[in-house]
Image (cartoon, rainbow, N blue to C red; front, side):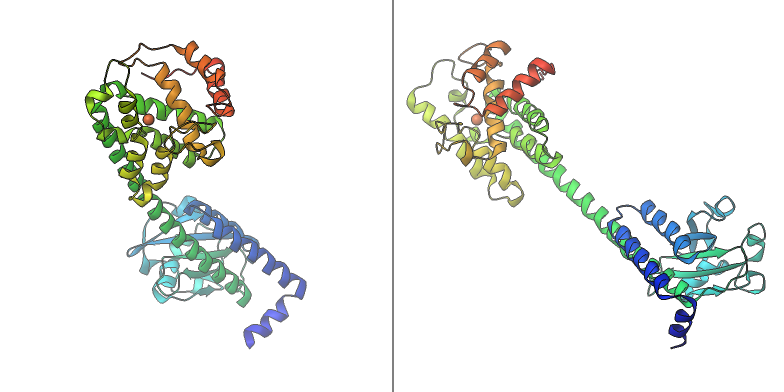
Amino acid sequence: MNDTRNQKESLDTSEYIQIMERLLYVVQELSAARDLDTVMDIVRHSVRDLTGSDGATFVLRENDFCYYAEEDAISPLWKGNRFPLETCISGWVMLNRKPAIIEDIYVDSRIPIDAYKKTFVKSLATVPIKTNDPIGAIGCYWSERHIATPEQIKVLQVLADTAAIAMENIHYQNVIATKAKQLEEAIDGTLLTIAKMVEQKDLYTAGHQKRVAMLGLAISKEMGWPQERCESVFRAGVVHDIGKIGIPGELLSKPTKLTTLEFSLIKTHSEAGYTILKDVPLLLPTAQIILQHHERFNGSGYPYGLKNDETLPEAQILAVADVFESMISHRPYRPALGMDAAIEELVMNKGILYHPDIVEIIVHLVKNKGYTIPE
Ligand SMILES: [Fe+2]
């Protein structure tokens, strides 16, 4: 009751609403923070702004020590130092799990007064970050004698509680990002190994998958796709012919024209690739792209004769990149056709076999950006 009465006495309604609005904004800012520096920066500025204090501290705990992680009031003196929790007021706040409100630091036994003599500080207020298991403390300083009001302490505690949640979120985001990266690297490593297994069998496609993947990546970047989507094109490109592992090697490197029967066997490789990868949930999108990489714009491709709008854009990219790369590479049944002939083929069948936008991007990459297929 007293707190409420004091609050009403010290703040009028419009001031109170202004502080609440500002506090709400800060809470939203903290929720969106993605790193500790941002959290500290927001807290440090908003503490001063919302309490009207002359300085603010952001102290973090490290086992039995604490340190001034972010400090604009007295940083040159203390920054980088580690203090035992028992020797400083932030440590006291953390050990006792409650705020400290000190009107005159020179008469309070909890203050290591020698450390403060060189500072402007006369009064301070500090609250723990995460009260039930403190991980730090947030404080504010005044250069004139001042006793922190209940609402100033409440504001400090709201900021500390929100900072605690923000820091926890950042921690878990970092853990998740690290795990996701490790998983992605493991998947990419596995796919590369599988790609090499296929290429051991079919020397003529050695490097073909990687080159198609790189061209697919360049095309998808040119389309302005987000990084993650571009990477999915690259990933599928690296293993797009994985299904050839089930086809006899003699057939894959046959120097003469394939019979209809032999070609129908080769054509099973896109479905076979899908079958190999589809049961790994993380690889299902890759499997679906592989399944469609021989479909054509007008529906004349295989295995299902799907038309452009029935296929994945990622598969459409790889379809054109695959044809283009194959034409400028040597094959057992023909020499390399060369860049000009490859471009001519794409342009001739633009909007028929190949998606016109993708053809245009390849032409643009080659003619205007000097793109060459890597060795
Ligand atoms: Fe293929």
